[in-house]
Structure formats: C-alpha cells, structure tokens
Length: 266
Image (cartoon, rainbow, N blue to C red):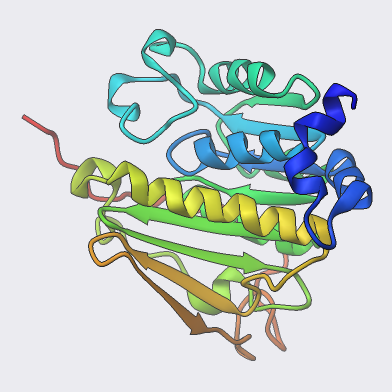
C-alpha cells in the first residue's frame, strides 16, 4: 500500500467515500479566512482529510493571548505571521496539500479577487466588517460560505449556498451599531468552544465537497459549552432581504466600519 493510500485509509473505507471521494477532496479549493480560534482546527482537519488546495487569509501575527485556542500556532511562533505559521504546520501534517498564503487585511478592494478562484469559503473571522464583505461577496459570486462565530462559552454556525438557502442578511439585514456586540477581548472565549465550531465548519466543507450527508443548509446551529448543548433553528429566506430578496437593494459590495466593545485585562 502506498503512503497516500495509507494516509487516508480510514476514510477511504467509509461507506460512500472510497477513492472517488478522496479524489473530490484532492481537487477541491477551499479558502479559510482567519487563522485564529475557528480557522486553526478547520485548517488542520481539512489538510488532514486531503483537501488539495487550501487558502489561508489573515493579516495578524501570533501573540501569546492567541494560544489558548489557536491550536495551529505554538509558543515558538510568537511574532510570526499567522499565515506563515499555519502553512508550516500544514506542511508538516500533510505535505500533499498545496497551501496558498494570503497575507492581507480584507477590504472591499481585495475581497472579490481573494475569493473568486476558490470552490467554497470558510468565514473564520472575528469582526462584522469582514463578515459582511465575505458573505455579500460569496453571494454575488455564487460561492458557498460556511459562517462560524464563537465568543465566551457560545458558538454559532450556518452553511449558506447562494440560490438555495437564506443568505447572511436574511438573519442580519444590517450590521449592529458600534459598541453593541462583545468580542473575545471583552468577554473572553473558551478555546474548546471555538474548536468545536471550527471543526464543524471543516465537517460542513467536506460534506459539501463530497455531496454526501445533510449539511446545515437552511438551519442555524448553536452551541453552549456550559451545558454541552446543541440546538438547530430552522432558517428561511426573507422576501424583503436586501441581498437575496425579491427586490434587493444591495447589488454591489458595501464596506462597513463597525466598532465592537473592548476591555483590557489588568
């Protein structure tokens, strides 16, 4: 048995997977935007599964405060660009995966070029400015996007397929006002909560690539780490949605400037 077959042997024997499923993964091009608490486990599991082309986009460097949850990085990576650190770990985990680094701060001028060449996108960002740009751009380009978020002990996940499911603006038509929503630096975050959401994002991506199982399309998944409770909420397209509704008012990208709450740890 050759090394490649041996590497994937435990998934190759799954019912409905086999060499054809592995080939679908090898040919897939997946972009993970954000190499932090969600992106770390997502990138590792996608690489381990054999997704052939992984894009990782981030503009930050690794800090000590990242290490409780951003498991693709370690203490030796402090000060290193997150894309560089992530690419190095993926290379050691599975050298068969091609990693494309995108060292950039996402904005209205580069988001379309970034997303265009990928089959699907995982939004693992931590701010609404990026989230609206990503979700709007994916809808306009017809790209599936798997949205994940985690803060405190809670997480949420949704799989959005343009033309088939509600879009992000069906849930949040407009961004929140400045200072309304907390962030990890304000509320804190349990690393395992982020890990569960990021891992589930990778799972949703693999199911979409393989065309197997039932994705979260049309449902919102919430997770409460304190009770280890999962809940699925039905989610429908809104006729009045400004992006995917009957008379859309948003037909091109919009970049918002949204300030979240922050709190320094003394």
